[in-house]
Structure formats: C-alpha cells, structure tokens
Amino acid sequence: MKKFEMQVQFRWADLDPNFHFRHSVYYDWATMCRFDFLKERGMTPALMQELNFGPIIFREEAVFRKEIKYDDKVSVNLKLLKSRRDFSRWTIVHEIMKNADTLCAFVTIDGAWINTIERKLFIPPAEVAHIFQQMPADKDFQWLD
Image: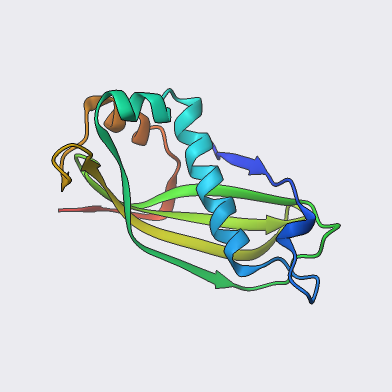
C-alpha cells in the first residue's frame, strides 16, 4: 500500500512550559494515526465492540530526534514492522515528521488482539487480517514465525 499519513492539529495544551510539545503528545499522535488508518478501512470501535475484541499494547516507545515548534507543519505515518502471519501479534512504527522532510521522532508499539469477553489474547477475525494486509510495510518488515 502507498504511504498512510495524517496531518497533526496542534492545541495550546499540547505544549510544555518550554514551548515544546509534551512527550505524551507524540504517543497521542501515533494512536490517532493508527486508529484513523483502521477506521478508514471499517475497523471502528463499534465493530470491535460488536465482535468482542480490541487491541492491547505490550510496549510503546518513543525516540526523539528533532525539536518541533508550534509553527511547524507536522505529519504522522505508520508502517508495519513485524507481524505474525495471522496478525495476532504485531509491531507498528510511526514516523513523526516536520515540514515534510525532517524526522523528529518515531514511536514503536508491540501489540496484539484480546477477546474482550474471555480477556485472553486470540487470533483476530478475518476483517483484521484484511485490513492489516493494507498497511504499508516498513523497508525492514519481517514475519514473526
């Protein structure tokens, strides 16, 4: 798939006392990007609730490279870095860019799917595999076997 990217809308509340974006805002941007990708392909919270499943995150890590200022134009993209072939476990990396050409940070998450009734990890419904197959793959993508 071609690149999936979203433009970021800033809020004054996103800034810290030094007029930098708070570190937690980067995680919020990554989450918004992920859920926009899923939602645009039909995997809405309502569908997950109807099918009794949802995502669970095992690890979330941000690496900060460049400062972002309030007047910068910021975008976030996502790429599938690793996955089991049934998409039951996966790693997604999000690149946070400013002014279309400067990598400012990346957020990497390791996740899986949980059955919300049994409260156990499980292999997701076919809809998930179909959607994850549409996710752009990182140049270093690898299957987890």
